Image 1: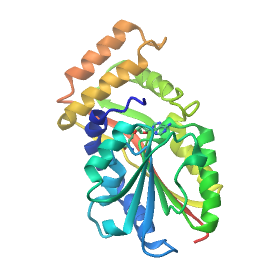
Image 2: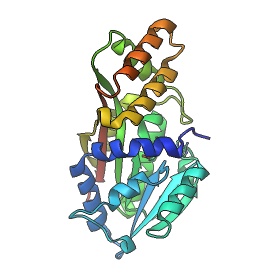
Image 3: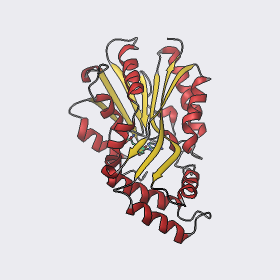
Image 4: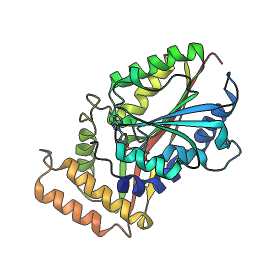
Amino acid sequence: MTGFSINWLDLREAADRRAREDKLLEQAKHWLKTHNTQGTARTAVDLGAGTGSTLRAFSTSSSQAIDRESLSWRLVDQDAKLLTEARRRHGGSHRLETHELDLTDIAALPLKGAHLITASALFDLVSADFIETLVGALQSQSQQQPVGFYAALNYDGATRWTPAHPLDEAVLIAFNHDQQRDKGFGVALGPDAGPYMERVFNRSGFRVFTANSPWEMDGTDSNLVNALITGIGDAVAGDPALDVASLQDWIQFRKAHILTGTCIVGHTDLLALPNAI
Ligand SMILES: C[S@@+](CC[C@H](N)C(=O)[O-])C[C@H]1O[C@@H](n2cnc3c(N)ncnc32)[C@H](O)[C@@H]1O
């Protein structure tokens, strides 16, 4: 079990959708639409797909819209319950396969023949080794058929609240420390994931495009902000730099200002396209 509930993924999806940087998303769709050397059908593989949030983001209408018959999705996740929900939501409307797999076994991933690999809210969970191995696999695959890579919503370590509280910075430091806890891939990159991916793709023969994609939340996102405060509180509880009473005070203060305050959580989106095309 990974601990990502359908409820949590649903709760964050509206903020994720607003946050995704539109130009990069359109560029990723354009790549998928135009870089296909083998006929008309395209294949996208979404890693850590959850209930299909990336598929939904790619399905919104735009000048780069790809008709559903021309695009096959392979959704990969280790959580069978999330994949069942993805099939329930999209099995009748999209060309869709689900693959219940642990991403750490990169050799077993269904990447063959893919035109674009996608992910969202995944790469801050992974390790440096995972990125090195995955990029190596995409680099060799691109020698046969070019494969692009689009990873949205990589947490960048910045969280800003209004109104301010004296413990904000200490809580953020503790939270960012927790972001590096092993999430099943080895020591997680957490906020370093975006810059790390950028470096590895750059030196592996890809053109890399990045953009900021912050969650910008106010009282209209009260359920998400409430869950975020609880999640941060749980993640940092026990950190030696925070005493229990001060942390409780911070949580109470933050919850008291959910409707009137604001919260910005920094993310970056990244698109990497093989050079030789
Ligand atoms: C934060 S959720 C994001 C889900 C989805 N991409 C979205 O944006 O709504 C991370 C996803 O990665 C999956 N995941 C985490 N570790 C995994 C692993 N080792 N193998 C396969 N899936 C994994 C989880 O089950 C979860 O669905």
